[in-house]
Length: 126
Ligand SMILES: [Zn+2]
Image (tube, rainbow, N blue to C red; front, side, top):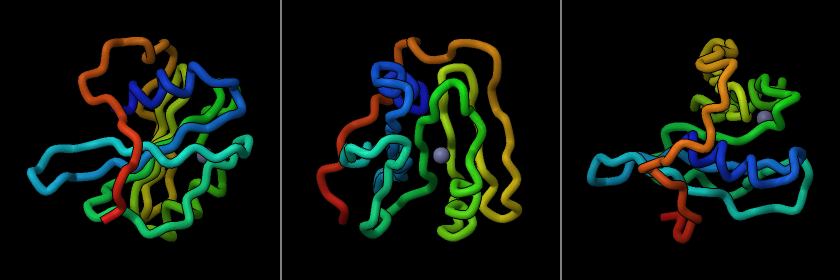
């Protein structure tokens, strides 16, 4: 599902972010719920309550800024959930306890591969 997010981000101008909740469904499946699109450049934000079962937040960064931002680190600590940052060539995650930025993938174009777990738009919050 993170690949799908990377794909969706790759289809957009580089400064537009795509963001989603990674949610554990009641049946145990993981799902990826896209945030409603906002018009802001590099400013995807979501002000509502976290959906039930949210395990992480994931959003895209442009290829030239693959590292989680200080805002991403602060947000991970505030909400107590890992934040994944996907870009065309890299995948990072912010540890919500330590604030450490961990690189999970680097140096290959990992988007564009058929993805079983496609991200779907958020329809309901609760
Ligand atoms: Zn970010």
